[in-house]
Image (cartoon, rainbow, N blue to C red; front, top):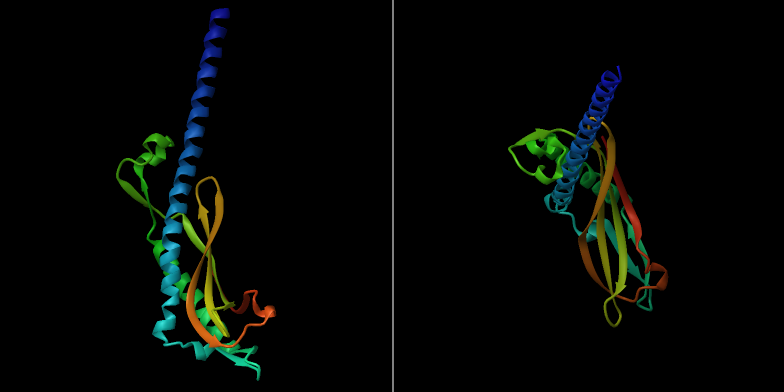
Length: 213
């Protein structure tokens, strides 16, 4: 009787250990797939952002189409007049273009080596790859940022940047992970004759655009 109980106990211990190993490898393989998806996203966001910014060239936008910097009689910058409609339309177009590009790339799937599904990181990079569609684009935001800096005696540098922030969801068998990253692209750099007042030193947002999935 005691011998039989020992065999049953050993079998249960083996079964528990085996199931624990399988579960561990299962969750480990999921984490490895997520790692590949994250790398793919980070490698794609740069291309998506610059693709979105190409609209400035395509539509032949000029600095003067967006802002008009006025100076007073003392040569100091007194006012920045922004064409709100054009600035926001440009920001929205950039966001939409970046969103569409990123969505198209992500729909192709992430290349994951077959050995990644073993859950063993040491061999996870080996074997032929399979396409996995585990990423979906949640949103792309685009803010146009205006900055003034001193550029010499009685000269001011006015720069316009587009900050493009992409957020995606990575969905696997066991979890959902949300990640985001942002890229800042200098789109206009203009030299103005005139001094910049201290109140304008801090960068400020002059346009916004957002596209959600």
